[in-house]
Amino acid sequence: MALKYLKNVVSLSLTDQKCIGCGMCVEVCPHGVFIVEDRKANIIDKDSCIECGACALNCPAEAIQVEAGVGCASAIIKGWFTGGEPVCGCSDDGGCC
View 1 (tube, rainbow, N blue to C red):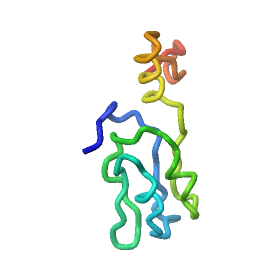
View 2: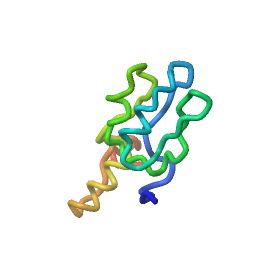
View 3: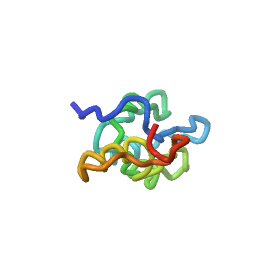
């Protein structure tokens, strides 16, 4: 079972119309975020995504988008490690969320 980091903050998205069902996303995702059903990839556990970018980099159809190392999840995790406040720039004051 993959760890859940933060709910509803991941930048991951999948364009179903572009997906060719090759399964590369399933193979390279370290947290089991994807499954292939009916010859199309589906995101089954978005909140387990760590935004590493492996899925997008290995998708031959460019059906997956993720901003690796950015966004709220990354900012909060970096804040935990550094002891600082999370900064992702998505709030009006430049902070996080």
